[in-house]
Image (cartoon, rainbow, N blue to C red; front, side, top):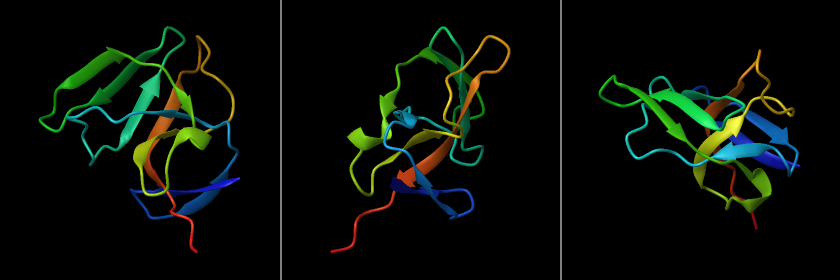
Length: 98
């Protein structure tokens, strides 16, 4: 299990290693702080200037992220379906304490 900090409310959760993540787009709106991913690998989110962003992306497992790295983390364990896209939240991987 990997500790993840939700950057909108600072809550910490422990997520399985295979939890899906997305890279942050350069102009991602940190105030909205959410994105959705459909079954065709299309991400929908807002840019920091209020435009809608739609782009194709592929997920990577949480275990591939470093401590302190910011990314979009899936809010549930299962994959997106046609009727229910995957939701992702702006988060950071909590650094390990030595």
